[in-house]
Image 1: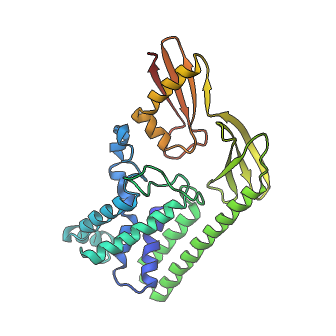
Image 2 (image 1 turned 60 degrees about the vertical axis):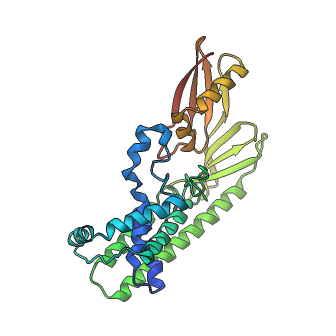
Image 3 (image 1 turned 45 degrees about the vertical axis):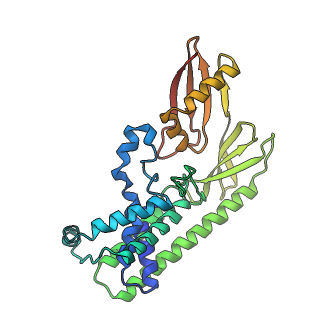
Length: 313
């Protein structure tokens, strides 16, 4: 989800609950997206790939730490004063357990919204690197972003408070409705598919188009079939089949040993962590194994291919 929505959702909920310190929740809602500040760490050091967008800060544990630090910084008089002068509105956020807990509430709404999107987030880090996702929304949703921005503009203007409440409530109704539509679309798309040719499992991934989904079928033995499906037209397109592993030269056992070594390389671990599905091809050239990792589904935060070389021992 986008920054505007992450600010607006906790702000609206706390407004409905008639809590005065709504800004702490709203700032908490955007705090963990400031992981862009540490993005360079993961980019320059592949072994620290968790330091990336939707990485370390997008977990229950480090989300709290991030909110605490963020609220502390925002509450400093110099910072508050600067923000107030820039936006020409008074920022009244004080540092204390109440504001920190409200900020963490904002973090939880952020984690829930990002959980709904494709790609997922490591909710249980540092105990697990697993990404969790409901795969209902695309990485960002243009309609949601534009409406959230429009509502924030309304909140900024000096209008009658009742119009501001109507705008916020309308946004929440739209957000919930859109989520319901996407959930229905996903179930309907999956029910429309008929598995054949030995394929036993199917997974649906959203795209930026509300009615278009990416589908991946698996036979459970390393063979995949993937395609695009339009639910309005009931039509599949771009159908392709791939294997989890392709060995071009050399023996299977030697390839497995090389892959085991390659899988422990930091850049490979980072690539696989950012991929929906990873397939491999291993090519032996008499001295080295050339191993290519491919993310055939693509991802907005990851390259589609990675090639590493493993010497043959």
